[in-house]
Amino acid sequence: MTFSVHGLAVSRGVAIGRAVLVASSRADVSHYFVDPATTDDEIARVRLSRNAVMEEITRLQHDLPRDAPHEIAALLDVHLMLLQDEMLIGGVKHWITERYYNAEWALTTQYELIARQFDEMEDPYLRERKADLEQVVERVLCHMKGAASPLQAARQGAVRAGSSRKQSQQDLLLDDTLDVPLVLVAHDISPADMLQFKQSLFAGFATDVGGKTSHTAIVARSMDIPAVVGARSASQLIKQDDWVIIDGDAGVLIVDPSPIILAEYGFKQRQGELERLRLNRLRHTPALTMDRQRIELLANIEMPDDTLGAVEAGAVGVGLFRSEFLFMGRAGKLPDENEQYLAYRKAIEGMQGMPVTIRTVDIGSDKPLDRPTAKAQDGHLNPALGLRAIRWSLADPPMFLTQLRAILRAAAHGQVNLLVPMLAHASEIRQTLDLINQARAQLDARGFVYGPVRLGAMIEVPAAALTVPVFLKYFDFLSIGTNDLTQYTLAIDRSDESVAHLYDPCHPAVLRLIADTIAECNAQKKGVSVCGEMAGDVSMTRLLLGLGLRSFSMHPSQILAVKQQILRADTGKLKLWAQEVLQSENPAALL
Image 1 (cartoon, rainbow, N blue to C red):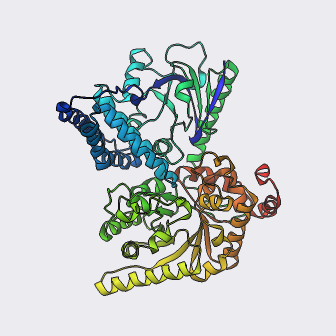
Image 2: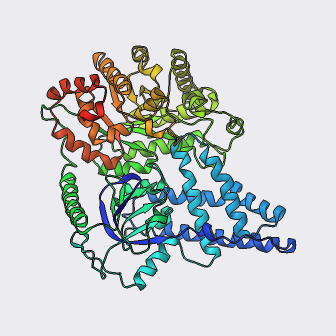
Image 3: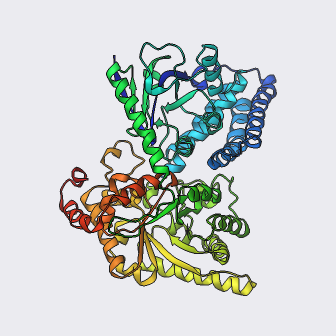
């Protein structure tokens, strides 16, 4: 009987095939107490397996094919750091030596302890790092059991079953038994396994866990693999060898489809492939509307190497370099000025003369930097409303000045815009500008060369959106962060699943704040862009154009689809329609 499982759409496209299930190693871990005299042996078992996984990941890094997505190398680095993290290793030793747990039990116990800390984080990206921890623990457990990685095991099983050849997914019939493509269904998949995915038998994948910013989702997008994550109980509901359709556009799994549904999705898949070929032809096409309005399409990046993907996608610059990624996963040691300078310079040079907008660190009391100052804030009840972003930077002037000096020095190598997150008060603006001037003075005193920067502020809280004229007195441009602006306008904590369904970027109040911000910037001839998820959502492109937006910043993989919408748009005609949408009680119905 046909049924569907809903998750998150993270990588577009359709994959059709028979399911290969990968079970979690944590589910069948043995629990027993060991003799106190053998605790060293138990610790050695964990250490040997941990080292084997590290060697495996290091080997994967060394053997990375030249055309491998650049995100993968960074993700493998993260996994290596997690494997060496003292909180994980020290905790495992504690459970073995103090409680006499066997090695597997100690490892899973410590994982659960750390995982709870990740669950309490407000920031969705950091919260999803729990998945990376889970993946490395799974791999260590696999080695302790003498098994290959979950994906390798599934792949080997599939080959033994005689399914090593693929036939076109678009011509499949339900009674096909040979040469049928495979789709992977798992609780989660690690980046290391993802690396082997493109050369594997699997046409797509679905996981129980993960979010839109999980590493698995990021890599899936970069590799253009149809994928659905966060499908909760998919790995329990779907049986081995079930027919499964993965609809990466809708975030849906269709299990045991009827012949008619199978044929429909075969047709949809064919159309999707043709659409991708058409979009690729737009890479060098200028982003001009039908009435000749030039639209700026920029890229959001996390690391300097991401500029490669941005350039390949046809971005005309970086609209958001999330510098906080340089600060994460460092076991408490923050990047010094020179390290930051080199990273920013690399991004600037990677964009080959195009502008790079660097956002100052957007970190908070909920975001673990393993520093005493951060740990002291762990008791905050509502970190989303607490010490985060510019508030955190202003509370730690030496750290902030270090970053500002690094950005200013990097600006000597190309066009740089300096973007400040989550400002709300004029006093915060003045403090920030004063520190920027202090940074310049310090560089002068040291004799360092630095370059000019355009100064910008993010509009992320209603207080900022309602006082845009104040911001424009001090800044050259504004960037609207629609994710946080929606969260704070509607008082919806996105990390709280019980109210997540109320999160609505199309709420009339959110749209009004966005529209007024764009209008005020345009009236004062100041630059304004949108860098939140809304910028890469093609269903919102026409509305934003109609509201007067001419600069969009998004993940590089979204650029061509948005450009297509732009090429078909006439901003003159959209202007009146956008005002009708703004007046509606249900704007989403008009999009």
